[in-house]
Length: 232
Image (cartoon, rainbow, N blue to C red; front, side, top):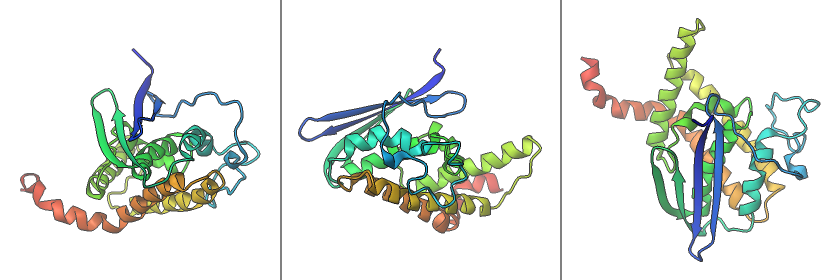
């Protein structure tokens, strides 16, 4: 028995170059288990373009936890161009997902995993999604999974004796905060970017963050007939 959940991302380029990331997440908390790094650059410091809504104290946290854990990924992709073609494989215990896509689209889900599991108090609100990770998800799939996760969270809150909110207002608030962090983090990433691939991969994540609350209600109305047996 291991005490971690393992996820592997493999990027294979048309010239034969292969980049692999073995992500380890604490099995109980889903917290990212980082590799030891001897030196982290200036752009990983918490005070370097710190997010405007960041609740972390710069006196207690030298590095932004997200930036520190993204450093190795950013370094390996900084010389690529966003539209370069790549085959991406995401391997988890249950199955393997594969897709031929651009580097920026293939990098987005990897960034999303690390960002939500690194200890950012804002982004970790999305952490439950990681255990049931679906790379290359469509907007509809993302909305269904996100709404489901949010409503499960409300059930768990109620079981724990806490207040529960059965509308999607709370989900909208979460995504507003996440969108602000994504926007601010782009400024941080620009300090690390040699090419645009890392920044554009983050922008792709931000597009989804903006679209989820805007389209959730209409998407749920569209799929309401699917639940006819449960509505009788």
